[in-house]
Image 1 (cartoon, rainbow, N blue to C red):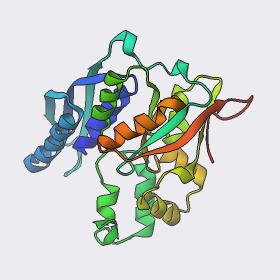
Image 2 (image 1 turned 90 degrees about the horizontal axis):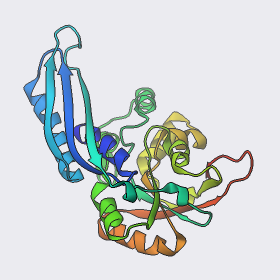
Image 3 (image 1 turned 90 degrees about the vertical axis):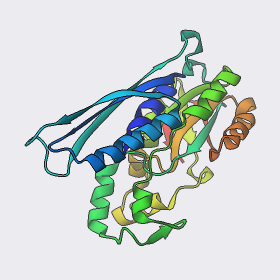
Image 4 (image 1 turned 120 degrees about the vertical axis):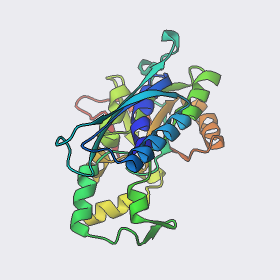
Length: 266
């Protein structure tokens, strides 16, 4: 959960082209459990290391009677910087540009109200073997992936290649991608073009969730969408793979017709 806290902040500012500089956290509880707090802060520190930013401080607050025993409240924020001339300008997106999907490590801190409801109803054995040699508990609780270092490298080494980025958070694929699209563009995503992790298949089957709702709530295996010109797509994907990312060509930008949704999963 500590890494999740960092990831949700640094991945969000990354889409503007910003480099995260430092992070601060806030941990509040009724009575401090030192072991729990130390584990959480360790996760925050590891997240900051992955993002290349400094953990420069934080606040720990004990407030008796404000929180039930064993529960805590966690918040945090990052400050980043980018030169105005180097801001990612999605206004340059055009029909024919390519959408590259970078794989997620799981649900990424999003959709857990639905995840909890499905787990409650299915009542599975959380510690039984699930897929790829891990348990269902491990799959559900996998920390959010941090994309800062490989994408910042691309932004610095090949300025202008990345035309837009969308961090797939609350709202899933169909509500996050449109945020960076010009009004005259629509994104066509082909779900057959990427590998959906087994966890999302399990959630859909056990929860009887429709496809449209899956794409609206979850990232469905894509944690970040990077938008580039067609002539740069192959090179961009090669560089991201060299950096250790799993990437897929998941769709294209098209001209938007009147009344057409800005993102369609087909």
